[in-house]
Length: 64
Image 1 (cartoon, rainbow, N blue to C red):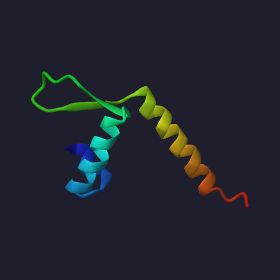
Image 2 (tube, helix red, strand yellow):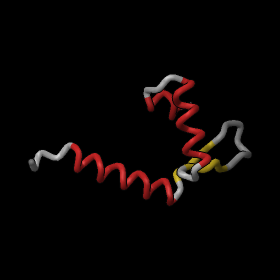
Image 3 (cartoon, helix red, strand yellow):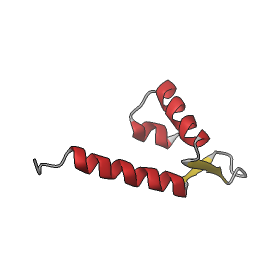
């Protein structure tokens, strides 16, 4: 999986996080007709990502 290599996580940890995101509806499997599995982010996942980016901006802002 290209996603696993880009995440810089080992296989076990990646699987744990990946399947939790899948179960909670942040990502979904698409197009099972191909020889490999494909996934995409859902609207719920995009909202979650936006919240994380805002939290990161607050945590690492230098306004204090």
